[in-house]
Length: 158
Length: 239
Image 1 (cartoon, chains in turn red, cyan):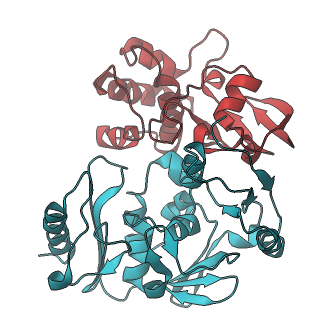
Image 2 (cartoon, rainbow over the protein chains, first blue to last red; image 1 turned 135 degrees about the horizontal axis):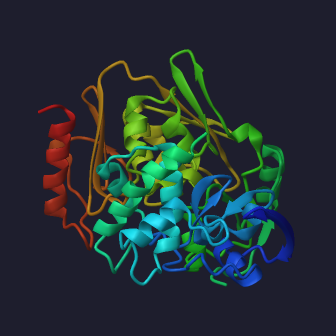
Image 3 (tube, rainbow over the protein chains, first blue to last red; image 1 turned 180 degrees about the vertical axis):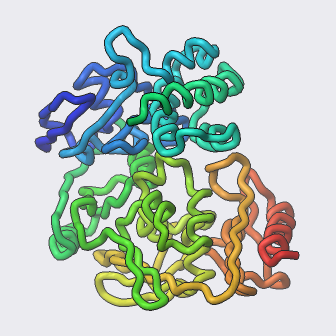
Protein backbone atom coordinates (compact mmCIF):
# COMPACT_ATOMS: atom_id res chain seq x y z
CA UNK A 1 0.00 0.00 0.00
CA UNK A 2 1.31 3.42 -0.95
CA UNK A 3 0.63 6.63 0.93
CA UNK A 4 -0.99 8.99 -1.55
CA UNK A 5 -1.91 12.62 -0.98
CA UNK A 6 -3.82 14.59 -3.56
CA UNK A 7 -6.13 17.55 -3.84
CA UNK A 8 -9.49 16.82 -5.42
CA UNK A 9 -11.87 19.70 -6.17
CA UNK A 10 -10.03 21.84 -3.65
CA UNK A 11 -10.05 19.33 -0.79
CA UNK A 12 -6.93 17.47 0.36
CA UNK A 13 -7.24 13.71 0.63
CA UNK A 14 -4.78 11.26 2.10
CA UNK A 15 -5.18 7.53 1.56
CA UNK A 16 -3.13 4.35 1.54
CA UNK A 17 -3.87 2.69 -1.79
CA UNK A 18 -2.84 -0.36 -3.76
CA UNK A 19 -0.57 0.65 -6.66
CA UNK A 20 -2.96 -0.99 -9.13
CA UNK A 21 -5.92 1.17 -8.10
CA UNK A 22 -6.97 3.34 -11.05
CA UNK A 23 -7.65 7.01 -10.42
CA UNK A 24 -11.19 6.51 -11.79
CA UNK A 25 -11.89 3.85 -9.16
CA UNK A 26 -10.17 5.94 -6.49
CA UNK A 27 -12.47 8.89 -7.20
CA UNK A 28 -15.61 6.76 -7.16
CA UNK A 29 -14.88 4.18 -4.48
CA UNK A 30 -12.65 6.06 -2.06
CA UNK A 31 -14.02 9.58 -2.42
CA UNK A 32 -17.61 8.74 -3.51
CA UNK A 33 -17.30 11.18 -6.42
CA UNK A 34 -19.65 9.29 -8.70
CA UNK A 35 -19.80 12.07 -11.32
CA UNK A 36 -16.75 10.59 -13.05
CA UNK A 37 -18.11 7.75 -15.16
CA UNK A 38 -16.21 4.62 -16.12
CA UNK A 39 -16.87 3.34 -19.61
CA UNK A 40 -14.31 1.41 -21.63
CA UNK A 41 -11.41 1.40 -19.16
CA UNK A 42 -8.85 1.59 -21.93
CA UNK A 43 -8.87 5.24 -22.83
CA UNK A 44 -11.14 5.18 -25.86
CA UNK A 45 -14.54 6.44 -24.70
CA UNK A 46 -13.52 9.55 -22.74
CA UNK A 47 -16.26 9.22 -20.09
CA UNK A 48 -13.75 9.20 -17.21
CA UNK A 49 -11.88 12.35 -18.30
CA UNK A 50 -10.84 14.63 -15.42
CA UNK A 51 -8.31 17.45 -15.14
CA UNK A 52 -4.96 16.69 -13.51
CA UNK A 53 -3.01 19.87 -12.71
CA UNK A 54 -5.41 21.64 -15.05
CA UNK A 55 -4.95 19.30 -18.02
CA UNK A 56 -7.38 16.68 -19.26
CA UNK A 57 -6.51 13.07 -18.49
CA UNK A 58 -8.22 9.71 -18.72
CA UNK A 59 -8.64 8.72 -15.08
CA UNK A 60 -8.89 5.07 -16.20
CA UNK A 61 -5.38 5.35 -17.70
CA UNK A 62 -3.90 6.91 -14.60
CA UNK A 63 -3.01 5.08 -11.42
CA UNK A 64 -4.15 6.79 -8.24
CA UNK A 65 -0.51 6.73 -7.05
CA UNK A 66 0.49 8.72 -10.14
CA UNK A 67 -1.78 11.54 -8.94
CA UNK A 68 0.16 11.79 -5.67
CA UNK A 69 0.98 15.45 -5.00
CA UNK A 70 -1.26 16.60 -7.83
CA UNK A 71 -4.49 18.53 -8.15
CA UNK A 72 -7.48 16.76 -9.67
CA UNK A 73 -10.71 18.36 -10.80
CA UNK A 74 -13.80 16.34 -11.60
CA UNK A 75 -17.21 17.30 -12.96
CA UNK A 76 -18.30 17.99 -9.37
CA UNK A 77 -15.96 21.03 -9.40
CA UNK A 78 -17.89 22.85 -12.13
CA UNK A 79 -21.12 24.02 -10.48
CA UNK A 80 -21.02 26.64 -7.74
CA UNK A 81 -23.57 25.26 -5.31
CA UNK A 82 -26.91 25.31 -7.12
CA UNK A 83 -25.58 27.62 -9.83
CA UNK A 84 -24.63 25.66 -12.92
CA UNK A 85 -21.32 26.31 -14.68
CA UNK A 86 -21.86 28.06 -18.06
CA UNK A 87 -21.02 24.79 -19.82
CA UNK A 88 -23.59 22.87 -17.79
CA UNK A 89 -26.14 25.62 -18.38
CA UNK A 90 -25.48 25.48 -22.13
CA UNK A 91 -25.82 21.69 -22.19
CA UNK A 92 -29.13 22.09 -20.36
CA UNK A 93 -30.43 24.71 -22.76
CA UNK A 94 -29.22 23.09 -25.98
CA UNK A 95 -30.18 19.49 -25.16
CA UNK A 96 -26.50 18.52 -25.04
CA UNK A 97 -27.20 15.33 -23.14
CA UNK A 98 -29.63 12.48 -23.05
CA UNK A 99 -28.54 9.60 -20.82
CA UNK A 100 -25.66 11.67 -19.41
CA UNK A 101 -23.11 8.87 -19.29
CA UNK A 102 -20.55 10.58 -21.53
CA UNK A 103 -21.38 14.09 -20.31
CA UNK A 104 -19.04 14.50 -17.35
CA UNK A 105 -15.98 13.62 -19.44
CA UNK A 106 -17.09 15.88 -22.28
CA UNK A 107 -17.62 18.77 -19.85
CA UNK A 108 -14.07 18.46 -18.52
CA UNK A 109 -12.56 18.32 -22.03
CA UNK A 110 -14.75 21.27 -23.10
CA UNK A 111 -13.69 23.28 -20.04
CA UNK A 112 -10.05 22.80 -21.02
CA UNK A 113 -10.73 23.51 -24.71
CA UNK A 114 -12.49 26.80 -23.93
CA UNK A 115 -9.76 27.82 -21.52
CA UNK A 116 -7.08 27.21 -24.19
CA UNK A 117 -9.15 28.48 -27.08
CA UNK A 118 -11.91 30.85 -25.89
CA UNK A 119 -13.46 31.24 -29.34
CA UNK A 120 -13.20 27.88 -31.11
CA UNK A 121 -14.62 27.08 -34.52
CA UNK A 122 -17.15 24.30 -34.95
CA UNK A 123 -14.42 22.21 -36.61
CA UNK A 124 -12.14 22.64 -33.60
CA UNK A 125 -14.92 21.59 -31.23
CA UNK A 126 -15.67 18.55 -33.38
CA UNK A 127 -11.99 17.56 -33.51
CA UNK A 128 -11.80 17.71 -29.72
CA UNK A 129 -14.98 15.65 -29.37
CA UNK A 130 -13.35 12.84 -31.37
CA UNK A 131 -11.93 11.75 -28.02
CA UNK A 132 -15.42 11.17 -26.58
CA UNK A 133 -18.05 8.63 -27.51
CA UNK A 134 -21.73 9.57 -27.18
CA UNK A 135 -24.29 7.00 -28.25
CA UNK A 136 -27.42 9.15 -27.72
CA UNK A 137 -27.25 12.59 -29.20
CA UNK A 138 -25.56 12.36 -32.56
CA UNK A 139 -23.15 15.06 -31.29
CA UNK A 140 -24.86 18.03 -32.99
CA UNK A 141 -26.44 19.36 -29.76
CA UNK A 142 -23.17 18.76 -27.89
CA UNK A 143 -21.30 20.89 -30.44
CA UNK A 144 -24.02 23.56 -30.14
CA UNK A 145 -23.76 23.50 -26.35
CA UNK A 146 -19.99 23.97 -26.29
CA UNK A 147 -20.12 26.76 -28.85
CA UNK A 148 -22.91 28.44 -26.84
CA UNK A 149 -20.87 28.23 -23.63
CA UNK A 150 -17.89 30.00 -25.19
CA UNK A 151 -19.38 33.49 -24.93
CA UNK A 152 -20.40 33.46 -21.24
CA UNK A 153 -17.04 31.86 -20.43
CA UNK A 154 -15.19 34.61 -22.30
CA UNK A 155 -17.14 37.14 -20.24
CA UNK A 156 -15.90 35.46 -17.05
CA UNK A 157 -12.24 35.69 -18.02
CA UNK A 158 -10.17 38.15 -16.00
CA UNK B 1 -9.46 -3.56 -9.82
CA UNK B 2 -8.44 -4.28 -13.38
CA UNK B 3 -4.65 -4.74 -13.34
CA UNK B 4 -2.94 -7.65 -11.63
CA UNK B 5 -0.96 -6.62 -8.52
CA UNK B 6 2.46 -5.01 -8.90
CA UNK B 7 4.91 -3.08 -6.75
CA UNK B 8 5.36 0.61 -7.44
CA UNK B 9 8.49 2.74 -7.30
CA UNK B 10 8.92 6.42 -8.09
CA UNK B 11 12.65 7.12 -8.18
CA UNK B 12 13.89 10.72 -8.27
CA UNK B 13 16.95 10.08 -10.44
CA UNK B 14 17.84 8.12 -13.55
CA UNK B 15 20.48 6.14 -11.64
CA UNK B 16 17.91 5.02 -9.08
CA UNK B 17 15.53 3.99 -11.85
CA UNK B 18 18.23 1.98 -13.59
CA UNK B 19 19.15 0.26 -10.32
CA UNK B 20 15.51 -0.69 -9.69
CA UNK B 21 15.18 -2.11 -13.21
CA UNK B 22 18.48 -3.96 -12.88
CA UNK B 23 17.44 -5.77 -9.72
CA UNK B 24 14.09 -7.01 -11.08
CA UNK B 25 13.93 -8.24 -14.65
CA UNK B 26 10.11 -8.35 -14.61
CA UNK B 27 9.84 -4.68 -13.62
CA UNK B 28 8.63 -2.28 -16.32
CA UNK B 29 9.31 1.45 -16.65
CA UNK B 30 6.16 3.60 -16.61
CA UNK B 31 6.25 6.80 -18.66
CA UNK B 32 2.87 8.47 -19.36
CA UNK B 33 1.01 5.17 -19.16
CA UNK B 34 -1.25 5.80 -22.14
CA UNK B 35 -0.32 2.47 -23.74
CA UNK B 36 0.96 0.55 -20.72
CA UNK B 37 -2.04 1.18 -18.44
CA UNK B 38 -4.56 -0.18 -21.01
CA UNK B 39 -2.32 -3.25 -21.29
CA UNK B 40 -2.35 -3.55 -17.50
CA UNK B 41 -6.14 -3.14 -17.47
CA UNK B 42 -6.50 -5.97 -19.99
CA UNK B 43 -3.83 -7.92 -18.11
CA UNK B 44 -1.89 -8.25 -21.34
CA UNK B 45 1.03 -6.93 -19.28
CA UNK B 46 1.64 -8.32 -15.79
CA UNK B 47 4.87 -6.73 -14.56
CA UNK B 48 6.12 -7.49 -11.07
CA UNK B 49 6.79 -3.81 -10.51
CA UNK B 50 6.40 -0.45 -12.19
CA UNK B 51 9.24 2.06 -12.07
CA UNK B 52 7.47 5.39 -12.58
CA UNK B 53 9.81 7.80 -14.38
CA UNK B 54 7.59 10.83 -13.73
CA UNK B 55 9.67 12.35 -10.92
CA UNK B 56 13.00 12.21 -12.81
CA UNK B 57 13.48 15.83 -13.81
CA UNK B 58 16.52 15.18 -16.00
CA UNK B 59 14.28 13.24 -18.42
CA UNK B 60 11.98 16.18 -19.18
CA UNK B 61 12.61 19.22 -21.32
CA UNK B 62 12.97 20.66 -24.80
CA UNK B 63 16.11 22.49 -25.93
CA UNK B 64 17.91 23.50 -29.10
CA UNK B 65 21.57 22.52 -29.59
CA UNK B 66 22.85 24.02 -32.83
CA UNK B 67 20.50 22.63 -35.46
CA UNK B 68 19.27 19.77 -33.30
CA UNK B 69 16.06 19.73 -31.29
CA UNK B 70 16.69 17.72 -28.12
CA UNK B 71 13.60 16.35 -26.41
CA UNK B 72 13.76 14.59 -23.04
CA UNK B 73 12.12 11.17 -23.12
CA UNK B 74 9.52 12.08 -20.47
CA UNK B 75 8.45 15.29 -22.21
CA UNK B 76 4.68 15.20 -22.66
CA UNK B 77 3.48 14.98 -26.24
CA UNK B 78 1.25 18.01 -25.57
CA UNK B 79 4.25 20.09 -24.45
CA UNK B 80 6.19 19.29 -27.62
CA UNK B 81 3.11 20.03 -29.75
CA UNK B 82 2.76 23.45 -28.09
CA UNK B 83 6.49 24.26 -28.10
CA UNK B 84 7.60 27.06 -30.46
CA UNK B 85 10.86 25.11 -30.84
CA UNK B 86 9.15 22.05 -32.33
CA UNK B 87 9.43 21.66 -36.10
CA UNK B 88 6.19 22.02 -38.07
CA UNK B 89 6.49 18.32 -39.03
CA UNK B 90 6.43 17.27 -35.37
CA UNK B 91 3.61 19.63 -34.43
CA UNK B 92 1.54 18.44 -37.38
CA UNK B 93 2.15 14.77 -36.61
CA UNK B 94 1.41 15.19 -32.89
CA UNK B 95 -2.05 16.49 -33.79
CA UNK B 96 -2.83 12.94 -34.96
CA UNK B 97 -1.55 11.24 -31.78
CA UNK B 98 -4.58 10.09 -29.79
CA UNK B 99 -6.59 12.88 -28.19
CA UNK B 100 -5.74 15.94 -26.11
CA UNK B 101 -6.29 13.98 -22.90
CA UNK B 102 -3.87 11.22 -23.92
CA UNK B 103 -1.29 13.70 -25.32
CA UNK B 104 -1.32 15.60 -22.01
CA UNK B 105 -0.20 12.40 -20.24
CA UNK B 106 1.59 10.47 -22.98
CA UNK B 107 5.30 11.14 -23.47
CA UNK B 108 7.49 11.51 -26.55
CA UNK B 109 9.86 8.78 -25.35
CA UNK B 110 7.02 6.49 -24.33
CA UNK B 111 5.55 6.53 -27.81
CA UNK B 112 8.93 5.84 -29.43
CA UNK B 113 9.77 2.99 -27.07
CA UNK B 114 6.28 1.47 -27.32
CA UNK B 115 7.02 1.18 -31.08
CA UNK B 116 3.50 0.71 -32.31
CA UNK B 117 3.88 0.18 -36.07
CA UNK B 118 1.13 2.72 -36.80
CA UNK B 119 2.38 5.41 -34.39
CA UNK B 120 3.23 8.86 -35.71
CA UNK B 121 6.34 9.77 -33.70
CA UNK B 122 8.43 6.75 -34.78
CA UNK B 123 7.63 7.61 -38.41
CA UNK B 124 8.78 11.21 -37.84
CA UNK B 125 11.93 10.00 -36.06
CA UNK B 126 12.81 7.83 -39.05
CA UNK B 127 12.04 10.55 -41.62
CA UNK B 128 14.11 13.14 -39.73
CA UNK B 129 16.98 10.70 -39.08
CA UNK B 130 16.69 11.20 -35.33
CA UNK B 131 19.11 9.75 -32.82
CA UNK B 132 17.85 8.05 -29.67
CA UNK B 133 20.12 8.55 -26.68
CA UNK B 134 19.75 5.85 -24.05
CA UNK B 135 21.30 5.27 -20.66
CA UNK B 136 24.06 3.33 -22.46
CA UNK B 137 24.50 4.52 -26.06
CA UNK B 138 23.15 6.45 -29.03
CA UNK B 139 21.01 4.55 -31.52
CA UNK B 140 20.02 5.93 -34.96
CA UNK B 141 16.28 5.74 -35.67
CA UNK B 142 17.01 3.37 -38.60
CA UNK B 143 18.26 0.79 -36.08
CA UNK B 144 15.98 1.56 -33.16
CA UNK B 145 12.72 -0.01 -34.36
CA UNK B 146 13.14 -3.78 -34.58
CA UNK B 147 9.62 -5.19 -34.85
CA UNK B 148 6.05 -4.71 -33.58
CA UNK B 149 6.32 -3.20 -30.06
CA UNK B 150 10.02 -4.10 -30.10
CA UNK B 151 13.03 -1.78 -30.12
CA UNK B 152 16.78 -2.19 -29.89
CA UNK B 153 16.63 -1.30 -26.18
CA UNK B 154 18.04 -4.05 -23.99
CA UNK B 155 16.56 -5.07 -20.64
CA UNK B 156 17.29 -2.40 -18.06
CA UNK B 157 18.18 0.23 -20.69
CA UNK B 158 16.19 3.47 -20.67
CA UNK B 159 15.66 6.07 -23.36
CA UNK B 160 16.96 9.41 -22.07
CA UNK B 161 16.44 11.87 -24.91
CA UNK B 162 15.74 12.11 -28.60
CA UNK B 163 17.80 14.29 -30.93
CA UNK B 164 15.83 15.47 -33.95
CA UNK B 165 18.01 17.22 -36.57
CA UNK B 166 16.33 20.27 -38.08
CA UNK B 167 15.08 19.40 -41.55
CA UNK B 168 16.82 21.37 -44.32
CA UNK B 169 14.12 20.56 -46.86
CA UNK B 170 10.34 21.03 -46.87
CA UNK B 171 8.40 18.56 -44.76
CA UNK B 172 4.90 17.10 -44.81
CA UNK B 173 2.85 14.73 -42.68
CA UNK B 174 -0.16 12.82 -43.98
CA UNK B 175 -2.34 10.26 -42.26
CA UNK B 176 -5.43 8.22 -42.89
CA UNK B 177 -7.30 6.83 -39.88
CA UNK B 178 -10.84 5.51 -39.64
CA UNK B 179 -11.66 8.16 -37.02
CA UNK B 180 -9.78 11.28 -35.91
CA UNK B 181 -7.43 10.27 -33.09
CA UNK B 182 -7.69 6.57 -33.86
CA UNK B 183 -4.71 4.41 -34.80
CA UNK B 184 -3.50 5.25 -38.30
CA UNK B 185 -4.22 2.90 -41.16
CA UNK B 186 -1.20 4.47 -42.84
CA UNK B 187 0.79 7.58 -41.94
CA UNK B 188 3.57 9.25 -43.87
CA UNK B 189 6.27 11.76 -42.92
CA UNK B 190 8.32 13.37 -45.68
CA UNK B 191 11.54 15.36 -45.32
CA UNK B 192 12.39 16.42 -48.85
CA UNK B 193 12.16 13.18 -50.81
CA UNK B 194 13.04 11.04 -47.79
CA UNK B 195 9.68 9.51 -46.90
CA UNK B 196 8.98 7.31 -43.89
CA UNK B 197 5.79 5.36 -43.68
CA UNK B 198 3.94 3.71 -40.81
CA UNK B 199 1.21 1.09 -40.69
CA UNK B 200 2.49 -1.03 -43.58
CA UNK B 201 5.17 -3.13 -41.90
CA UNK B 202 6.18 -4.29 -38.39
CA UNK B 203 8.22 -1.07 -38.05
CA UNK B 204 8.18 2.29 -39.79
CA UNK B 205 10.01 1.94 -43.12
CA UNK B 206 11.50 4.25 -45.71
CA UNK B 207 9.33 4.48 -48.81
CA UNK B 208 10.21 2.26 -51.74
CA UNK B 209 7.25 1.87 -54.04
CA UNK B 210 8.47 -1.32 -55.68
CA UNK B 211 9.40 -2.93 -52.38
CA UNK B 212 6.15 -2.03 -50.63
CA UNK B 213 4.25 -5.12 -49.54
CA UNK B 214 1.95 -3.96 -46.77
CA UNK B 215 0.80 -6.31 -44.05
CA UNK B 216 -2.99 -6.24 -43.97
CA UNK B 217 -5.09 -6.40 -40.82
CA UNK B 218 -8.71 -6.78 -39.74
CA UNK B 219 -9.67 -3.24 -40.72
CA UNK B 220 -7.47 -2.68 -43.74
CA UNK B 221 -6.43 -5.44 -46.14
CA UNK B 222 -2.99 -5.27 -47.73
CA UNK B 223 -4.20 -4.05 -51.13
CA UNK B 224 -6.18 -1.23 -49.59
CA UNK B 225 -3.18 -0.19 -47.50
CA UNK B 226 -0.98 -0.17 -50.59
CA UNK B 227 -3.42 2.17 -52.31
CA UNK B 228 -3.70 4.47 -49.29
CA UNK B 229 0.09 4.50 -48.89
CA UNK B 230 0.67 5.50 -52.51
CA UNK B 231 -1.94 8.26 -52.29
CA UNK B 232 -0.53 9.67 -49.06
CA UNK B 233 3.05 9.59 -50.35
CA UNK B 234 1.98 11.44 -53.51
CA UNK B 235 0.19 14.00 -51.37
CA UNK B 236 3.18 14.39 -49.05
CA UNK B 237 5.50 14.92 -52.02
CA UNK B 238 3.12 17.51 -53.41
CA UNK B 239 2.08 15.38 -56.39
